[in-house]
Image (cartoon, rainbow, N blue to C red; front, side, top):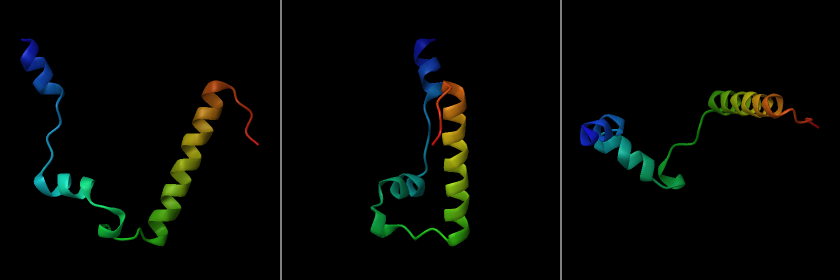
Length: 59
């Protein structure tokens, strides 16, 4: 039972996705301008959520 529960929590990655995860920055294509903007917006949302959740003052 315990082993089966642990197995269900493990993630399985394909060989290609695992290789991508271990690739160095030079091996990865640069993000497009649109992707950079989207990531910047998402980062801002995350910061705003943390500030709000912890009652911090954003400057």
